[in-house]
Amino acid sequence: MKNPSIDLPTQLVGETKFPVSVGTMVLVGIALLVLLFLIVPILIIVAMSFGDASYIQFPPRVLSLKWYMQYFGDVDWMSATWFSLKIACATTISSTVIGSMASIALVRGAFPGKAAIQAIALSPLIVPHIVIAIALYLFFAPLGLVGNFGGFLIADTVLSVPYVVITVSAALKSFDPMLERAALNCGATRVTTFFSVVLPDIVPGMAAGAVFAFLASFDEATVAFFLSDTGGKTITRKFFEDIDYNLTPVIAAVATVTILLSLALMAAIRVLERRASGKSEKN
Picture 1 (cartoon, one colour):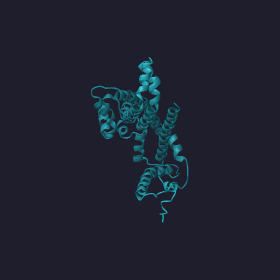
Picture 2 (cartoon, helix red, strand yellow):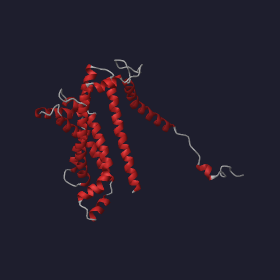
Picture 3 (cartoon, rainbow, N blue to C red):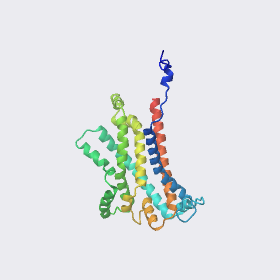
Picture 4 (tube, rainbow, N blue to C red):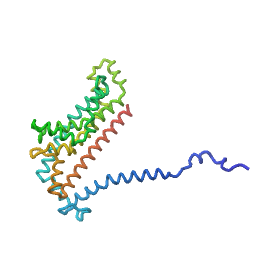
């Protein structure tokens, strides 16, 4: 008598579905808990920003745009916001230029002390910001760079360059050097080759680094606390002051605007990456 299991069609055997293992379910559950732990506080802040009460309340009983109107109509908040935006935009430009040049030297160059220079360039990601803040304050104070645009630009550029170095270095390492050599063999100069062949390929990496540099500058709080004064105050320093002396839901409104700005910039990076990948697939 034949075993009936031997006569089963091969297609049925191949289509057999196994149940999800317990370990997978546990990992998914842990991931969801971590995601909720990160997202729920943000959702609570957003909800509180639409309240009508003069104190922080959750859930809000009445929905209102009162605190957004107060934020955009407050001279101190607007002054701090525009000051932070100007610093962040200038930091984005300086960090992108310096970080991109450093990445090209570190990825393509061969010179003594390369590892040490790379470690120094990335050190702001490792050294605690409180240590950097104290060092910058002690160095900037005698030079009159505390509380002004120049001091913040230098400090934020130092903190933002590592993000550009990481993203641009990754883009350069994934770039095929044979394309560059082919352009040079065809008679193109190194400058022409860089702008015509290399630069278009690493633009997504530079754009990602620029966005991270902008966010690192705009959201920086520790160094801003040491370098701010009455003449130059960032939005993060204004946050600290209002939390201590004037805790109202306007802080939740400002935080919501900051969150929306960050999400918009991250979405822009995603769109740019998709366009770049689509062009590479067509080519």
